[in-house]
Image 1 (cartoon, rainbow, N blue to C red):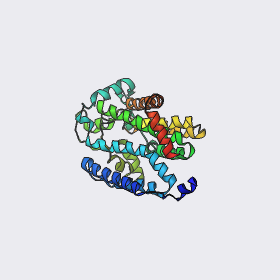
Image 2: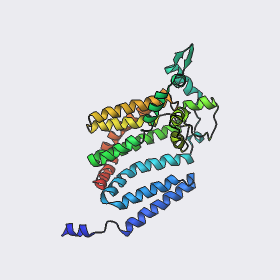
Image 3: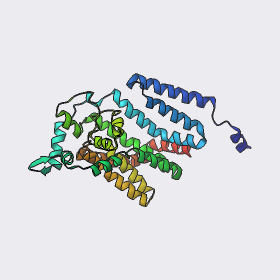
Image 4: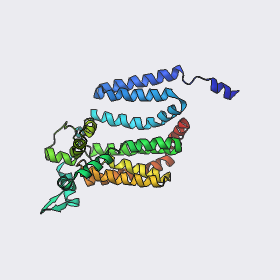
Length: 312
């Protein structure tokens, strides 16, 4: 009898409609006030509401994936609070430290790895590197989708770890604002606030395919002075860790290749120093370890259990 009553219940109630609609309008309003209206905001709302009301399975997926949505919103709102307004931007010191630690002697001159690859790059590396760099978000998102169907607990653990690593990176961004290598190439060591994002070496990929692929991506960047740590380098580490944890076998070889490819491309295209990449890897390791501790010793354990219930 209880099962029959449950089956006869409507899929959604007026409470669902009121809550989701209120949250949607609140998000659009806050976004407009902080960073202005953007079409991506409407797309996000449409996707969330469509999946929430489409079916039970899509509702569970989008509610679990809302952890990732929270990360995206925080990242987007960083535009309203640029880190250079809170601390000094590190430009020259990071450049010289990179040269001192990882400098490459070329024709009698010591170059940073970025400068070296600008002189010794080729079309093959431009294309291959661009393909790797396009994977920094699709691969984690696709992996999260796989985990949703394969292992719901790891799905939640993966998303929470992903957000935790990002939050650690965001804190460092504000404590240690840092310019990327391409900034030194185009602007020298003089700080210029409100500097627009730049595709740097990835422009060669766009030129090869005659399409503004990376140009469109970097035109929406939150802050160019957020090079340290390289979170691009953190993401594949998280994917690889959970891939190994889920015992995916040969697929982990692919994850490993993507990881190294993203690390190399970050330096090759002058978007990050080697120091940034190492900091990103460290950030991922710290975040993964911290998640493990928090999940055992803090209220995070209760939150995870509630999320497991929501998506199960």
